[in-house]
Image (cartoon, rainbow, N blue to C red; front, side, top):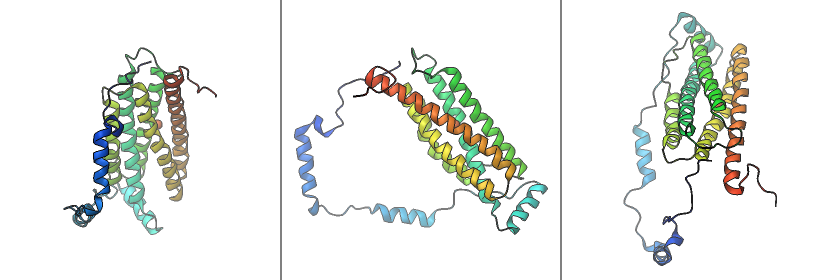
Length: 248
Ligand SMILES: [Fe+2]
């Protein structure tokens, strides 16, 4: 299996330099005399928060049907823009999911050997599910009178959060197992977020969306389980030379 991690000369730990480590720890003992830092980071963040604009906004529904729908929802006390914001978030996430799986496919295409069960075909199936979920959400937003091309505030935030995942995945140094760990993080967020979305549309009384989203949620649970299995096999193979942990 592709595995670029081995023992080597890593100097990042304290124990790599015991003499300097002692000197450093002595400084900690003197900390009572250390003056307060020139910058109060908490006050600085508060100052930025006070001046900050919100991360975007949700536009009013574009279609006549949507305006009517939104007005109806508002009359019943529900807040349609909350739903459109969260739908926009999942839409952005599923699009990013396709890109993440594409990057994983690039990573393993030349790998000499893969953990048991992990195949190009299996990864393509999950990638295609993410693309289908993107299309499902786009259609749902249209049906509610929204604009699926809108970058909603929650879509923006989830995009920023996902940058770290994509960065880890596309780093040429990361291994198949590290790619799987990255996918597992992405899938875990995805499953709990779909669960929340199902209860949200249910709360709005959109039974049709609730049943379509429940099916998507079930598929996402399968993704998480498959990725978790591949990751466990990859790590166990490195640790024990076989995909199952050795019983002691
Ligand atoms: Fe997924």
